[in-house]
Length: 446
Image (cartoon, rainbow, N blue to C red; front, side):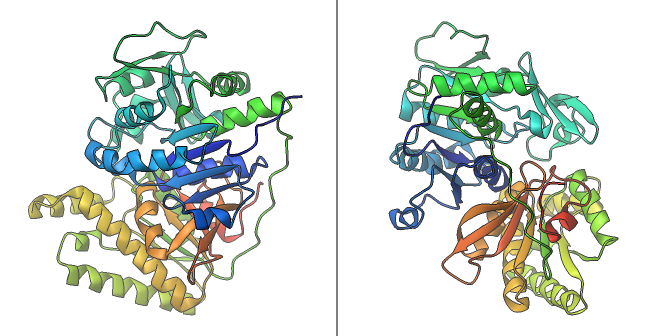
């Protein structure tokens, strides 16, 4: 029987908050103590949790420019490497959200490779548990009961920031850096090229190929410490560890029980989230539309809109209903076009506006939770989760109860009043129609 080495097995850095939390979920529910920090943890914070075998940091890198990534990722990667993990994982979205100018995976690979000097950088985007499959180098993603090639995916092909026009993972990444030579892994390292970073993408479409991907990553980690991919990296590692007897297979924890009140904030424009909002409206939630165009106007207008929503949410709670605050119901909601028009008319920067929207949603959530005493919440939208969570004074999350892969219920760790808050972070495309109700009921497999 093999055994896992002492110390940290994985240190990961997530390019958005929901995805970073998904890595923690995979590891925690497999019996590996893991915690996600909202910034690089201090020595004092880590000292509170001496039994951790995996440590992650959540970021908003997916919404950052290459220069911003230089400033954030370089010191963060270096700090995580100083913890001496067996693997350093740059966690990216399972639908490959990125471009040469926003959330560049190529730039992240350059930074990680410069710090670790690998022979090759494995890239594993696929996660079959989440209907993400890589076959012959091409990425496919499920939506409902259908599976689409990424460039034909109804959501990702229309993504408002990084629309996917390429399904070949190696080609997509190579287009983001002139230093990268990216190819499909075929079982043997490809010939090296001078002055390039050799990247290999890994096919994974079922248990067998996922186990093989985990074996390739783990057996090569001494020479290739830096790996890039979705939570599929951890799914694959766990499969390999269980198969080799290095890790005992465990049953995931049960649900946390129904909440005595819950608050949801959503900045997602995904059609999946739109369906969840519709279900919630018909099942006991009070839906409240936040006018996102106020984030384009002056600070006074935004503040007034925040005050209005907080007032209406507290009134809903007093009436026995759970408030669900949202900016749009899907990509075809007129609110999306309205926000784009307002940004264009003002000559504003969309990234800055989205940041203000996320911060406003976080401020509303903080005020509503504080005044109502409610102890369970959901933040919907990957980028929204990053901006909003920082408004709550939380420094870390640990996994509490599973739902669908990638959107578990977590426990918040904070130095202030939000310590112990039960919080779920959900990517826009994630979850069943009744997801918000599932979290309200406490999660748990079903």
